[in-house]
Image (cartoon, rainbow, N blue to C red; front, side):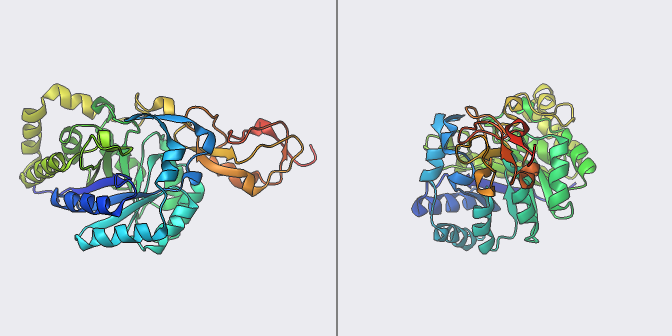
Length: 362
């Protein structure tokens, strides 16, 4: 067999907590643990959420996410330093933009690749911008349907995009991962596939993903799961990340698929494997179904609007809704809305729907 060694992406995200000293420790430890690439997040709160989003349930509990994101905002030079430190360790710097501002910042850093997170699969303005860069894209597929992925790929292009199969739940139940989907998804979409794994176990999902043909595995990384970062409770510490690296390398050294399967059956048991492999049909996982339309993007108003007002571009934003506000129209309609007349009162932050507006002259 001797299949190509799986690429491991250590998702540091914002685990550095905005501190370059802490970031340097994370970068060095991730490299020693066997990561090939380190992924960060370029956070600007205003292009992710509205200030009135309220509390969001995360692994660490109910979180005032807008305020936390604001606290993580940093100058452009911070990300330039992250890239320099990462490349000094011989690792690839990868980052996720969440809107056009952070995308512009990231583009200035000339990354080899770009990562699009699951909630931004339908952020069409962002996808159009990134597609113009001419670099490969890693596209996470959590809380999305086949139609969402097709629309995204039509913009990004299939020749330079890899889909990372994902379940947008923190932590994600291993039985939701449906890894039999991987070869079907690759064949149907015409792109390579990998996995972004939010389960707690360092071995099961990564090794089954390898068996089903994934070339890339992304896993959150932390110095300690007790640390206060947004994703630290579900991340792997250096010891567990190294354990994952070594196990995957052992699988890659086997000379047949039959030996890989036997090793996994002995390690995990057939029942547990079958549960994680699933039916192979692309659906919303049970643990993420309630978030569809809320975690991903829709059109929200940026200020209080009253009947008779004419919509302007600056009145609209493509944001995540979460649990308190109501979702608006799909971002594909963003360019159609300026110039329409507001029909009824819309509180600041609420999603804009067709019932809120009139055509000119109606």
